[in-house]
Image (cartoon, rainbow, N blue to C red; front, side, top):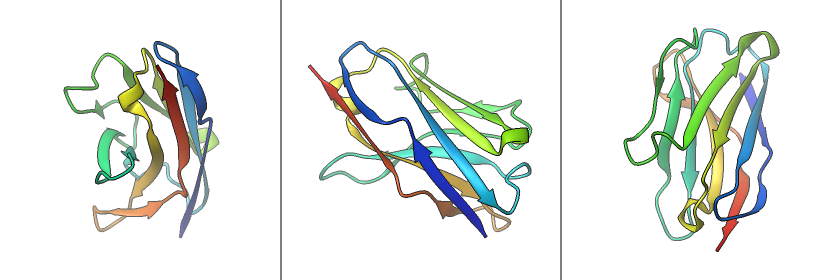
Length: 118
């Protein structure tokens, strides 16, 4: 089992930045692909970034490229999401997830709230 705990959310003005962290415990995440998702009120959860176990490949949807960057530190069992140029529409609960052996997003954190004011 893998336990994931997100932190770093909060209230920020439009144009500002936040860095989210995801701390993992239990089984090592060093060989798992990791990802970030978000869910805004009344909307479905959406994928926003993922990173291969080695950290050498990252992926994100086109509409976020250039603003959000995912990274990881396997020695610290941690994953990060740097968010720049935040917009009010980025307001959501942000979740960290780990892709397990079944190549599905098997492990999830409880989420951290990000609110961007205009």
